[in-house]
Each structure stands twice: as structure tokens, then as C-alpha cells.
Image 1 (cartoon, rainbow, N blue to C red):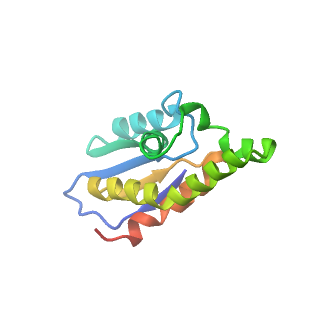
Image 2 (tube, rainbow, N blue to C red):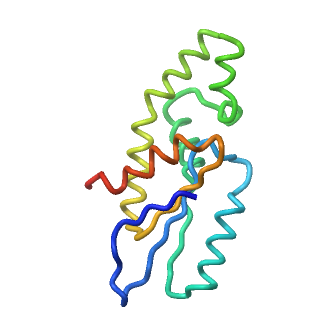
Length: 143
């Protein structure tokens, strides 16, 4: 897990932690790892607020509002382009790439609105790029 601290916290204030799972994590079930981490932190540190942001679900909701995208497209569409060579799928993949900065902006706004002291991003194999791309944004962006 990649952790990003947003600054120092006064001792008399609750620590706010946001745990985020990014695309391309599974959309079939919630992240078990984040659920376990949240519970462990809450049990160990009662004065800490821990929330989970499912960026993978936000991504699917966001993209389906903007283009012809189905849940079955989520896990394999980019590799399908390599396999089938379909021009339609290739155009779809390029359109998805073009929309990536806008969804990143949307998720960044959600993170900044919550105002966490620490943000932890999941980093499974298929999530490396999306997690790294998002990790620097909250610290560099201003509202």
C-alpha cells in the first residue's frame, strides 16, 4: 500500500485516514484488505477516523455516464484491443485514455473534500499506474 501524508496533525485533533482502491481493482466485491485495515486501525486507535474510497466503482459509474461502457468491458477491454485488433475497440480504448485526466480530477476533488491527513492507495498488479497517478494529485492540487 502506498501512503501519502498531507501534513502534520495537531495532537488534540482526530487523525483522518482515507484508504483508496483505484481502477482496475475488481468491482465484484469490496476490497477485503481495506476492510481489514480499516477495522484494525479503528480498534487500535479509537481517536482515528478511517474511510474507504472505492475509486474503482467511482470510475465505472463515471465512465458509464459518458460513453458506451458496460461492466463486462471493465476488466479486459484494453487487452482485448491487443488480441482482436478491432478498430472499434481501439477507438474505445483511446477514448478511455482521453477521459482519464477528468476522472482523476473528480477523484482528487473527492479526496480533498474529505480532507484526510493520510491517504493510502492499494497497489495490486493491475492498479500500479492508476494508484501512482493519483497519489501525487491531492498534494499538488489546490481547490
